[in-house]
Image 1 (cartoon, rainbow, N blue to C red):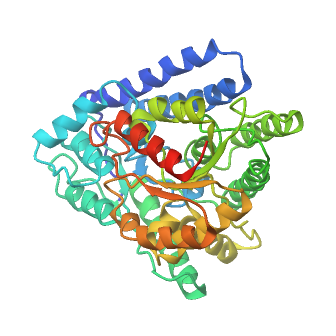
Image 2: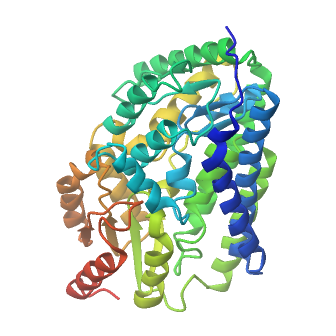
Length: 435
């Protein structure tokens, strides 16, 4: 049964503010002629276009859904189904000026401050009627308890009570049995989306999308190899997070996304040939093993470069474990999507299953990228990872590379202030003889 959607303009208030904020950022980037700023501007423009598309669908009564990057967005694209990420604001517009006010409003609403800020904000926007009500919601019951709680709360929300919700059931272990099972879950998701949007999935179109994403991930793999160079061609300003946004959110299986990745690769290649990087002299090559501190990224990351010559060589969303999808038939395609979205996607890969992923990813990156320092920021909401901090530290000790666990909130700058983080890092660098 196709859901009947009634457009409610007031529910788009925050969504429009986010779009306007990205338009503002795009205008600033347009004044910066350097190649990295222009690469960032293209991703910003693509983001604005997605916001406009969702608003247009709502105004015209066309179907759209809320979902996740790790729920096979290739399927959304193949169905011609517009979608937005339910946690979009905390990640995409986290540096927006209204973020702190929203965090306080969520607390005033009674949402616990020990709960992941991204999930807390997402529920606040729904409860406050600030986020678009979709035709259907693709939920997520992995990798963390906070995400599971978010969808339980959404299901009971008065405004969204009639929104159909589907959440695929994730197996724990990475084996063929798990891949086969999750492929069947993705097929159930397709049936759900077809029922509630009226759109159909065409296998030939899905194959075409997956063929393009295979190209995208091949280029991304080659790009990550360039980041092994001394000096690293790019730092925190462009690279993994933007490539992730292109491949798994805004340009999944689209030639425009492929072209952007080619430009990213070419820029890095030119810098490697010229022997240039983001700082005049690279002194510290660090691995930031988590999401970037979106709420105050512009205060910490440039300081690390200018004050310490510390360059972000790799981070969690820049890792490249993606497996090409076998395009022979429907069965191989769905099994490929199952592996890619359950076992390869960043954060989902590390937090969903055994702690071995934390250890093996650290060991791989430290060795492959000649890392001087591993930073585990310890986001207050990533309790799964913080529970494994002892394992991560032990691996770093074996590799003879310094490891620091900060303890912060990726979105709320008041939890551990930027100045407190700078002080802790400076003392650690000095004690370890870095920089």
